[in-house]
Image (cartoon, rainbow, N blue to C red; front, top):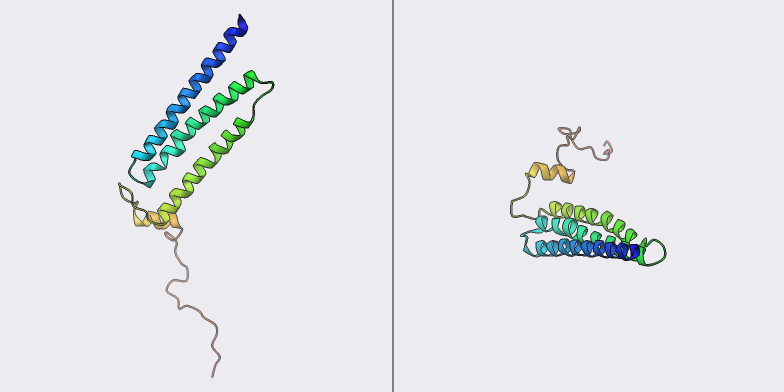
Length: 140
């Protein structure tokens, strides 16, 4: 009887994780379609969809660890890879969009902030005011 209750609890846990994962994945997909611009669309795949796929991977790991011999680590490795690469790729996409000055619905940040982000602003050139020095010209 205890084995039946344990199996039932594992199946309920897996079903709950699958429903949560499907819900987050669905919300991430809807947000990707409905949001207006690139900056807003970056949030849904990196937040909601990552949580959804992570929940599905946890459900798979629990199920196969319970019913097969040994611990299922394949899903854990996929989840680690997903949680590392999703934010990094979103950051790089956002940085490239800012670099290209891609407009958003709420407008871009100030030009001074964008120049600082690009690495061109808020730097003073110590040689300002001096004549550019070229190769020495031979004296005649």
